[in-house]
Figure (cartoon, protein in one colour):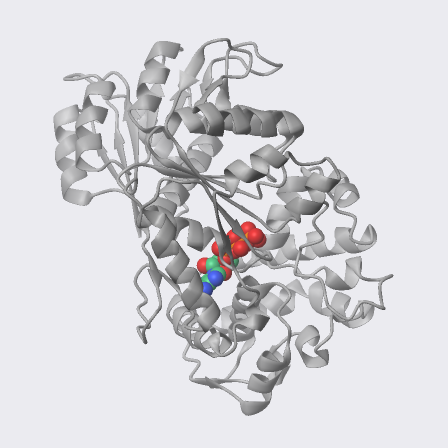
Length: 494
Ligand SMILES: Nc1ncnc2c1ncn2[C@@H]1O[C@H](COP(=O)(O)OP(=O)(O)OP(=O)(O)O)[C@@H](O)[C@H]1O
């Protein structure tokens, strides 16, 4: 269970945080003074901290300095009543994760804590390279011992300690984020922060502001100065995921940062000097984008001082067997299941499929099969249509729709299985149904689907990936001649 600590002498803040986190699996601790807070922090070692900037015995900034010496990777959210931008900058330099003004809202607290915990996970959970037979369930294991993956591990070893930019390439779901974290954890910057920014999940203006920060009044809605991730992550490592999805303006700013290690906040004129290592990832054909003048050649060269190519799962030989064993063990533990094996017929299906969505798709298929399973062995009926036909499933609207809309059936099944995560499971189920339906309606056109859903295209792509939605039958509806299925959720416009 995650632990969150609040250090604030304002009891209304504590009550609000208690309310905001009442329904989540988080253990909350609180202190009203810096001294008590520090003692509690050392004792409980929380995963995130909400810290008042004005405490009775010390300022929050002074306390943050002590905390940084104790645990430099703890995401600290500063809470304050004053909109003093100097204090905000100082706080961010001290490694604050966020800086927020009172009064706080419930949703704001939930969002801050959720993001803080995710950042903690990215920095803290070790990524272990599985070069031997270990099936350790601690941390995250990069499973695979195929020659292709051993080559990847060697490359991580070669480049991690060199302070150069690394570009990780590979199809969606091949494990690019895990590789980025492994490089960071083996680098000499591992004592400093690691922040991940998904370039596709934000609009152009928001991405620029997220990376470089902005001055008050820089654009509509910029009502105070904001420190960007590069400034916040000075001396650390930034992971730019989906780096092919940056506007020309952001590309030029990132290029300048890579060349000169300096930049200006949006709407500002002060030059800010930073020392940040960039690890980026993409599944876009950047060479083609360069030819089409959509991507800067000079930026491409700067980003890939060293390039790591992650092979698709279908080219990793027997790794699929290791991954299946790994996910069975993991989900048995997580879902409280007792699956002991997979029937020969089902195994044939898993080995015969081409896994266009790679490890993420395998993980999602196994998880769903385990949720559906009624006995200790996984048999073919628990696996989706795509696997049975080895080709992407044709839209069989009637059966798919019947199954997809049967929320009562799903809930019966989960209740019978003794789920204690019903809210998350059914929300995910509903979101998957909604997105699939709207994408289908628009023949896989993500821009149109995003418009109807009222979310950004980047956010839609992000959800398609995280939910493991297979949209190949939608986007390939008029491309029967193509034998190779599209990766899950990878009809990248770039
Ligand atoms: N070799 C591996 N061993 C164990 N788990 C893996 C491996 N590769 C990927 N995964 C898991 O698969 C999922 C997808 O991995 P990840 O997010 O790193 O992929 P990605 O290539 O960054 O995807 P995208 O391009 O869509 O962002 C994650 O849950 C990750 O933990």
